[in-house]
Image (cartoon, rainbow, N blue to C red; front, side):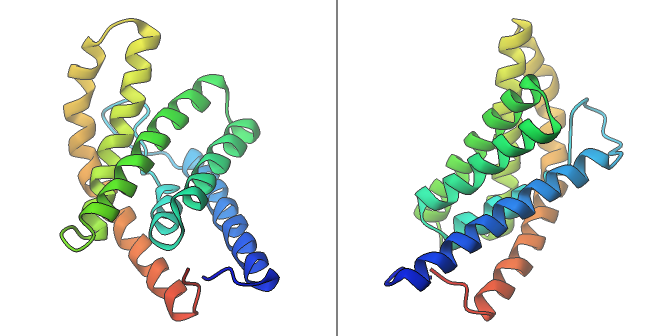
Length: 176
């Protein structure tokens, strides 16, 4: 979307607000799903559908706002300080890695590939905070291999859904 006038700026602000709201709802739904993973705390990463969409359709600043607002509002509404720290560390690292990859390797890696790398980065960010909290980096060597394997199907699923959403939004002319 271009921001030439007040109407375009308003439209973009509404689009960003809708993405934040979608991310909050997906986070809430994910908290209610019983996910049978081996590693404690592993999730599907449904809110990353919104993060990927923001990365592909908005500027860095706008996409970062979507990610940060979603994390903050979700933590205040449904979480705790520890869930906020884990979400923030995973979400920010994942966002930065995915944004970098999409800008540098846009024609070389698919959205599904970006999503898988983002899922791995998210897990790594959370494990770094967990290792710091419990004061042992043995946690990383124990859980990271398991979470990296889990990141492949979950990242693939998130990437496929994000691709459908982005295609739909582009068809209805929600481009920059």
